[in-house]
Image (cartoon, rainbow, N blue to C red; front, side, top):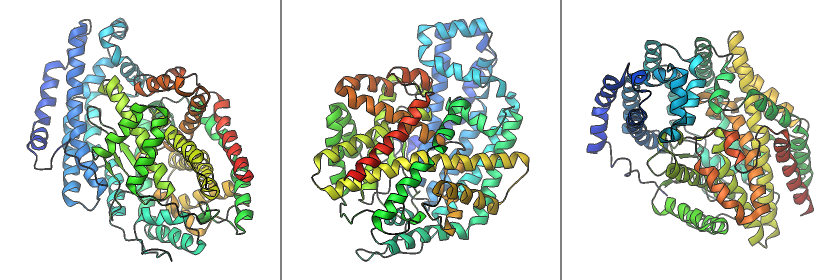
Length: 585
């Protein structure tokens, strides 16, 4: 259950790590001396331009590899002093080396229109067309080389330093242990969060309060960090002539603002589904539903599985769609590319870390509950996506925008749900699985967009002036009370819950993407259910695009329009359909 990072480096003493760290400046400086001020001269020489781009990619690859190793070590154990120290050193080294490369994108942006047209039409440069298109989109927001270099250098002591401070501070916190009547005391955030699925309401409440107690104690600190991060984004948006932090982030997501607004509006119109469901759950359980009871089981079903059992179950589900998918998933486990062990100091949540040219890595804290099964399946979906993208794209076309990034992961979860619903004869388990899917969908549709609503408030307030932790607490409570209505009691401790959301610190306006991607992914999965294996080749093609196409263009290959409000409403309608199925059970 622990990963092996030797594909990257054996250790911090690995001679390759030492060599890459020492030589990075020289390699980047050599590239600058070779090409700075000369891109306009070689723009019409297609082979020369391809060689230049490939050299740039090779340097970027060293950047990513150097950064990934200490970052993964740190996230697996935020108390690891060596990882913490090397992560800081690598960040500084990469930032300085990146300064030598700033000229590259600036000079491409300045090329004459006729040269750009010729470059984009050249078959030899086809893998880099979308990369170039994105560079041109950023042209109005790009500053001089000198200013970009200064911002690179100060970045490691600015916004990113505050983000890392939060990570390190959280990793050092101790949570009040909670002992369920059927187990041992637990005191990590992942294990405490797993207790929110416990049948005993007192245990759920104790686990909920244990986690929020830490965030309450440090509410002022996290509020200050968020205020500084938000202020930095405001200043960056202003100097780069963006209308707002939101417009800056949407450009990077390749999502037009009307699509974002549709997501926010459609989900706001669906709050009644959230409330109807939890009123039903309250009646079914004969308890008032609080925010700590959202995941309360309808029946006590002991369905824990070991890590190995869960992996076998996922293999079987993957085999239903495609033998290659099953093979890829087995490769993650057999190759030890997953860190699933629960340990103190481990970063919360789960992720799949893709790095072009290397096998992706997955981090999760596996607790054996159904939530852990589906989390593992979800992250393995990202892994499948990463493998297909790596095979088909160059580095500069490999990173998919968020709307596409969640498709394979959501697809995997839905596939696992259908597999388990079909295989099981246990009505209680079916009810548990169906309710889990409904509640996960509620999370994606309503919690994630509620985070975005909070972020709009935060960044609008920052534009008008400033804010503190108490103001954020109030706005978070306002939106959750609006969502819960008279169906869910929002406990006082929930006002501190926003500080658990890492994305609002390190990538604002990211969470709406989970909702939009869920909507698109569901449409994709329903096409698979309709067409069966005939859909699989198209699905693989979609995954292979990576970041080489805009989301709308990539999704045309499977007949889905992400801007269509019907796609968005379809996800709410599908969730209500599952709700009706649950009531029938």
